[in-house]
Image: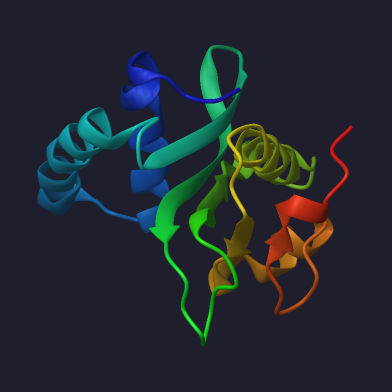
Length: 146
């Protein structure tokens, strides 16, 4: 599912687990992250998550970017996404939940006429399992979404 504002507290705790923050850093970052997500979720940032037993087991984030023609990178003007911060709690690993979160973001991007999606380097292996070619963007204009 695509996260909404009421999911922010659970997303925040899972994201802080990904960062490995403890103590004072945890509490300082928690409040800052909640405020940030509240202002940007489902505008410039989209988060897919899987709930199990009323808590988030896995999550993935897509950041929306808008670009105009650029002779070095883009062939067309429009929106594209960058998927990053994919994380699954230890108790739920190796069940393909991260792939499910990524696929949900791909569908959202397709439904919202994004031109391409890029995978962050830190999640390259997971994104390859979700259909990205190594070192390539997922070109949504030519992808058959069923």
